[in-house]
Image 1 (cartoon, rainbow over the protein chains, first blue to last red):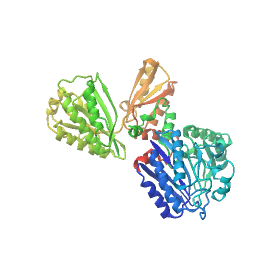
Image 2: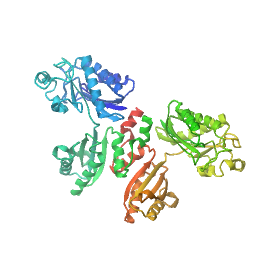
Image 3: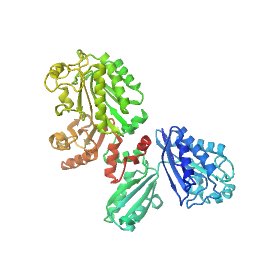
Image 4: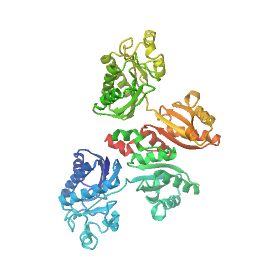
Length: 297
Length: 297
């Protein structure tokens, strides 16, 4: 079983504090810290680790223990919106685990956080218990500074923990979601209008695919434009379908695709799915991937 | 480091003996038995396991120990050519290991087999020390029954071990090779001549791609034909190039591809390579595959 967890913490300037957080995760057995990065202007760090359910829960609690000592939101400043010392904790199913199991894990971890650190917990995305509290942006609106008033208003009792914010650590948003694939397609043109029109054609918000967020941007140094995307559910809106649609839309303007790129990590299944599509592998099973068999015995 | 090893053993009828062999492999720590299958008419079993260099070597020796007790080639009968109780032992680099390291492992394991079991060892494929003894078929020609005479002739001293066959266990062929991908493309036609012409166009033996073996066959029950292939080096002759060539050749006869299939296991890299090609992922790195990062830290 592989679950990925990507906690976002409200500290991106003090390298020693971030290193202590990373070490706390690394010390948990059965968990592998895959990546961590800090942004000073956001004053925020993102940790990526993976393991089984018990391991990632322990790693979140270990990270929390450092953060609640080191971060005081009353004095924290940064460009990125936040409402907690540990701001958001998504669990993501990667292999041998269902979304339902990740939802259960989010609830179990949320309850443990509330019990141990007396921090209120809001469940979001697939773990949400309330349609008005499914999107992270809706929960975070008003940020730490507006949290006490928000929690006093109807419909904003937390899912776990005290009814008012923690004095220094605010609240935390915990949930489960599909892996997010950051995927960009570079066009062989400098026409920004073409990239913007294609982005509008494929993103959900303007009538496109349900699990695509997209915008057209200019890559100044290369003199080309890019359709920059987040694919929020590669099983239901697969990479290859997005690629083929962008290619077809670009052709309308006489523009071709220069290249595409995955930013950061991508689950193997997302790329194997593309191979299945193009090679017409109609009866292929994930267990035929040698590495999957190695892990699952 | 992941090395795959696929020993072929000359016993495919006595289920208890095969089970004892499988158990011997399973008991080696750090090694996972992925598959084993027996063919009664061939009187032969194929074991597939994987692990690090030390683990797979120990598993080969453990398998040998059972085979040399249980198999007597003087009374063994079966349709498949063979010269040893353990007939052939290929080591295959899967991840985090080079072909050169697998060649070294083949030599180390071959020396250990000769030392411990007094069985002559011939090195083949990438581990071969002699161009006339690179192909398995050339080494095996004459089989167990002709082995004593063959080994007495010039050029057939073994790479390790005694100069004459083991009385009951014959000899063993040990080496290193790339993963073999069994890949078939089904055509939307019942015209066997089309499948045969395409097979001839793409296979090395008649002028096609260097690492393709292919033949055209009829799938009687489905009323269609198939280009049935072994891809012996998917890095140098990739699946997507073979697929596209077959598609283009088929179009010449007005025939389209119905579907393709991978038989058995395939390394993820072979399919990720196809995704890179079709999605024009020009700067993609294997470390971006989440599962690879998990294994390699």
